[in-house]
Length: 271
Image (tube, rainbow, N blue to C red; front, side, top):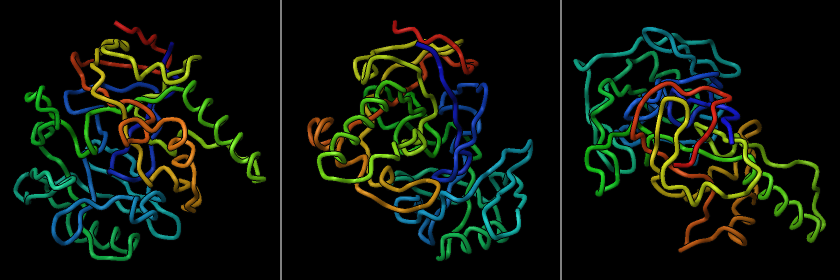
């Protein structure tokens, strides 16, 4: 098995940036989900409820970001420091975030259609992980764990299930789902579907990871990231074939045991 592709999401719930290599840090891949959009109460906004966020691309600069989206001017945003820190929350778990200022707030408010602020996780060690058995772990503004990995073999099998159901029900079968639906950091080229569910620890390049659990998929996967149109899949087919203990599973969470550089093409070794 080898790394097929690598992806970061500089602002949580926005479009992915494809990278050839990435430095794995304790909280996740460098520049991944260090920014987030919050409402007036400081709670996260995501594309689950605001699909227009998927139209935003955030390009990382040495000192901040450039934000782009269709139909609006680009905006350059400087990374704020702790002097503008307030409490923000991801899934009700608080940590300090620095406010990126009124221009960024106005820009994102125009995208999502309600008053929001853009915040920066200036201290990458400020948010504890969710696993009580690993109290020293930290995480970015990602939902649960530092990285998410998926495999090409699992997507092929899922698309076959979807195709079979569509043929059964007389639907169009011409559009298989892309991996973008699942928002992975690491895509692994594999022949065997769902082999990742049995991993304990793996090594990729200079980094080593523990498997921190399978990813329970939500309604965000039903939104086409290019058109923002919602459908039934993949949740309908996952419910048939990958419902385990009440969760619809696709992909796995990874937590770093050793940090370092990983690259597209690196071998993936199951320890």
